[in-house]
Amino acid sequence: MGAMGAGKTTLGRRLSEALDRDFHDSDQSIERRIGKSSREIAQTDGVDALHRLEKDVFLEALAGDEPAVIAAAASVIEDAEVRRGMTGAFCVWVIADPGILDERAAKGDHRRPVAASEHLEGRERLFREMADLVIDTGDRSARETATLVLEELRGAES
Image 1 (cartoon, rainbow, N blue to C red):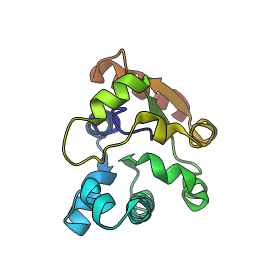
Image 2: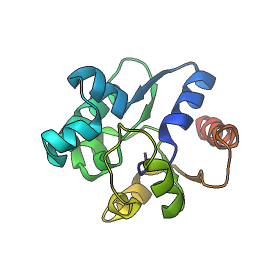
Image 3: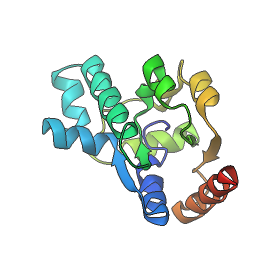
Image 4: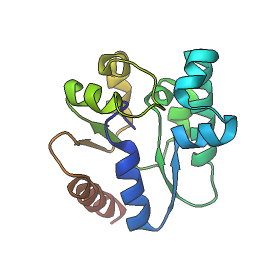
């Protein structure tokens, strides 16, 4: 979990491969389901509609028969049903400096334009409560980040 541009998708793909688990990405799941990007949904249907979809695809991925790696949209952390559903899941809160988040989030046309601070206001406390691990991707390569998460995950399973 984490703000847009924190590196959730990149990290999730690496972890999925290393753990030989399915990978679910909120943005990709929504686009497959609706045929529109998150940006398009926010523009045409509103941010609340987008957040409902983000919640739905997250809960569906979480309810799968096999453990999976899920790159969840930051908005889902606000929902109490989601937080209850995360009980027992290993949760990684992926962070980076707000300037880095803004720079990364500006790349790609699937993301809606927001400032990094929008993702943190009111959510930081919830991320802290749910996270088993907080990892800063700002000064690490994707490989280094994945290695650190795998070490923590394997330690948690022991």
